Structures are given as C-alpha cells and as structure tokens.
Length: 291
Ligand SMILES: [Zn+2]
Ligand SMILES: [Zn+2]
Image (cartoon, rainbow, N blue to C red):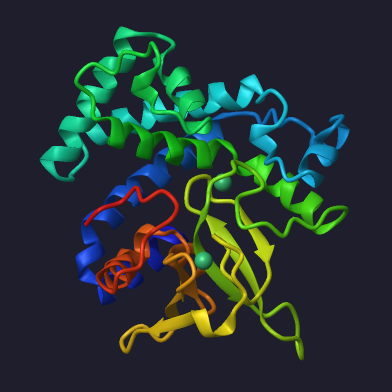
C-alpha cells in the first residue's frame, strides 16, 4: 500500500462515514498514477510564453486567458475516459457503476465527446448544453469525473504556475489562478521558525493552491473582524470552519500538519460541509460530492 493510501485509510478509520467516497478516490488516484507513468510529459513551458505574466497580473487565471493548450485537453480527455472505465466494475455502489457505464457508452458513441466535456467544464458551461450528446449519462457525475481528470492532467502545470506565483508575481485573489474556480479549503501553514502562520487556499476543482491574506473572506473580500467567525469542532481539533456574515459563505480550514494529502482533498471533510450548511452558511464554490 502506498503512503497516500495508508494516510487515507488512517483518516477514514476515524471517520467511517467517509468510507465509500474514500474508496472512489483511491481508485481514481490509481488510474491517474498509472496513466502518468505511461506518458512522457509534454508540458507547455510557461516561462517561454508571451503574455502569461501580463494576463495573470490582470487577474486572468491561466486557463481562462490565452488559448488552452490542446495537449492538456487531450490528456484530460483520455484520463476522463479511463476513469469512467475503471469505475464500471469497481467495488462501489451500483449507482456509481451504472453512471460510469452510461458515461462510457456516451464516450464510445461520440469520439470527441470527452474532449468537448473537458472544454465545457473549463469554461464553466454545462457539458450537456452544447452539441455534446451525453445520452443517458448523469451530467453531475460527468462534471465530477471531468474535474478529477483535469486535476490529474494539470499537475505539471500547477508546479510551474506555483513557481511563477512565488517569484515574479504575487497572486492574492480569492479565486484559482489556474482555472478560475472558487476555493473549498483553506490551509494554515507556518512558513518557517518564528514566523506567524500564513494561509493558502485550495481550489476544489483543479487542486491548485495559492497564498491568500490570513484574515478576510476570499469570497466577498470582507475583512471586518466582527463578521468573520470560526466554528470549531470538538472531535476535529485540526479542522475548523471559517464563516463570513457579510456574504454567508464558509471555508473549511485545515490547521494541522502531516495529513495535508488527505485533509485538503475536499471530499475528506464532507462532514464539515454538513455542519456549516446546518448552521445556515452556503457553499460558494462547486460542491461535487454528496454523502
Ligand atoms: Zn482551480
Ligand atoms: Zn464573505
């Protein structure tokens, strides 16, 4: 068992209600790892690209700016098809098996469908609203898988963008510098000995992370201390929910160390979404997972 899988297992042992969704993610991670090991990485070199820095400085996320690289779309589309295929017979719920089979059938019927779905998702459009024929396939399931495939295909680009953001450019916005979606998680990190904690935000869609001001709501920019509160959880000392009375949004936040690989995954803190929503706060970004 890999280190990552062992960490997921330890996490789920303490939170057995996450068992099914964890199984799903372990399977998808294996598909991603396998296909990454098969490919030679043809990553577009950002530093050599004209206009990349200028667009980011204007606040335009990388994948919303210039033409999205065709190789990335192809890679994500191939991964999407593989992921659907892997879920057809996976030991998961019948509903997931059925959704995967329907998605696979739709992909078989139309050669270019997976790529069209990936493009639509990146543009925040519903994949079924264009000419793409999803057949009986469940759109929500396809969107979920498409983002999961994209986050895999975009990994090499994330590393390059992170370097760029740390160096020449400080992106301090409340949305993802790579895909433009809103964050689902915050992460308090200690940059070095003797330094105060800083905050990173994590995109729930593509998995990118970036730094953001420590205090303030990333969704509406509110910095009024009285309106920014924290919901703590007795049985989750390394997690909390940051809320904003200004816009009614919440951000799940990991304050611990050592479990980043699983704690920041969004699906692993679904129970926090329930708590926040029960208290009347709304999830502002995508919510792709349901219990
Ligand atoms: Zn993103
Ligand atoms: Zn707010």
